[in-house]
Image (cartoon, rainbow, N blue to C red):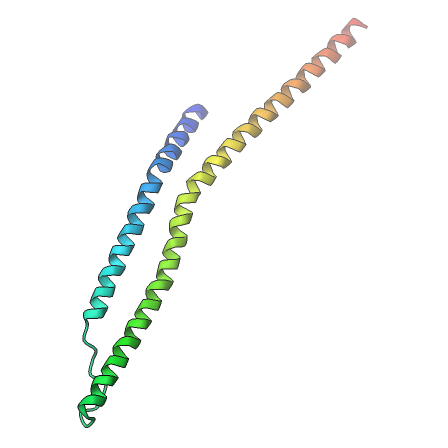
Length: 135
C-alpha cells in the first residue's frame, strides 16, 4: 500500500514538473495580451467631460488631455502593481514543484541513511550477543 502511494506521488510530481513551465509561459503570455488590450482600450477611450460648459474651447481641450493622461497613468500604475503580484505567483507556481522534488529526494536519502545506521546497530548488537553466548 505504501509503495503505491509513493508511486502515485512520484507520478503526480513528475506530471506537475512537466506541465508547470508550460502553464507559467501561457499565463505570462495571456497576462501580456490582456494588458495590451486594456492599454489599447484606455488609449482609445474619450474622457468624460470634466469642465463646465462656460469655459472656452482651448481650456476644455487642455483639461481633457490632462484628465486622460492622469487617468491613463493611474490605470497603468494599477496594472503594474497587479503585474508584480502575478509575477510572484508565477514564480511560486514554477518553483514549488522543484522544491517539493528536492524535499522528497532529501527525505528519501535521509530514510536510506537511517536504515543503514539501524542495520549497523543491529549487526553490532548481534556480535555482542554472540560474544556473550560464547563466553
